[in-house]
Image 1 (cartoon, helix red, strand yellow):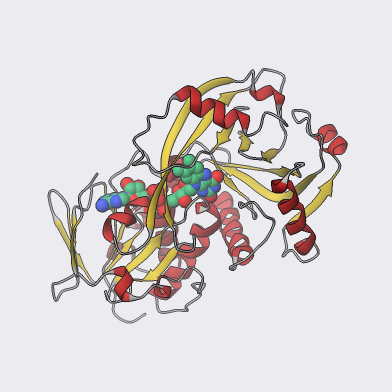
Image 2 (cartoon, helix red, strand yellow):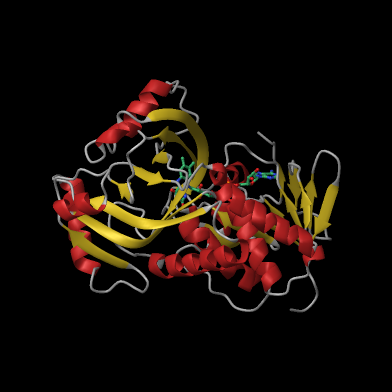
Length: 383
Ligand SMILES: Cc1cc2nc3c(=O)[nH]c(=O)nc-3n(C[C@H](O)[C@H](O)[C@H](O)COP(=O)(O)OP(=O)(O)OC[C@H]3O[C@@H](n4cnc5c(N)ncnc54)[C@H](O)[C@@H]3O)c2cc1C
């Protein structure tokens, strides 16, 4: 790397810290890196549990480099497990996807038939009879076969993020727990981030702001998508032993509680979301195969928001066209764990001038400068 470019990352959650970790690992001087975070309670990274598995969509397929990214992100998680220990935040498991007797099941089965001979290591996926699934996983009661695959994991992001932050902090990265209220790219020195008390000036700014990216670029089809997760205390004797994804997904945490999710709606929708309706919608998504959810006690409902790029539902990672020194690391939708750790590594490579491994499917430059907008100044209001 030539001269050190003072760099700010706005957003210190899964995306921002993944990137910061890789920058520092590659030798970027920690003291030249500042991370701003305003601690949004509704951020996706605060979810009580996130699923990590290779096929988070309706089908078993690995399009748009998904397989390579899953493998890279999974390896990065393995490194973090090794480094920080895994007790508080990681649970490995097996994913069970019932091949239901409807169009959804057919789609799942057809997609599996096309790819199951050709899955990259370490992914393994088999078609298992209902009886065998029920025998192995006592909390399940399937009447149809299921796809059963590994690796899969339930991740509680908050403790992981704390480990990452502590590590970066100890190395000398500057953390500022404040909202960046405005961003100005018109000055010769580069970029200015203004908070309520101070201003930071430097050459590069990375927007790792989650769903707030929509505030910055109204010309792009960026959507905030809210969602709910249900935390359940199952009846005493019931253990799932597996993660399950039918119409909804359910994970069993190390302490025995279940997290059932998730809903998906526009947060500006004014229809009030009654708790009973949310609970019913989520339980209905799995009750056919896990009867015990009916008796499970509701501990609480968690509500959060993810940012989605509506045009192709892929992340936006890399330089913002037409705005030298500005970068995006956002729009990870409902697949933050699958994309963000690997995307952080790719963007760090680019920022360090080492290599460019940003997949063309998620490269921010697939959208033109016109779409990103040509104004060089924003007033960003903290919501
Ligand atoms: C209901 C629900 C279920 C989900 N389930 C899964 C799942 O099972 N598996 C999975 O992989 N993913 C899942 N996701 C998605 C996942 O949570 C996100 O993709 C991921 O957490 C995004 O991380 P991020 O760092 O990009 O954004 P966020 O977690 O939203 O963090 C953005 C950060 O930027 C900060 N910020 C924003 N603006 C400013 C500003 N102006 N100044 C300072 N700081 C700022 C915020 O405070 C926040 O800390 C789910 C999301 C939701 C909502």
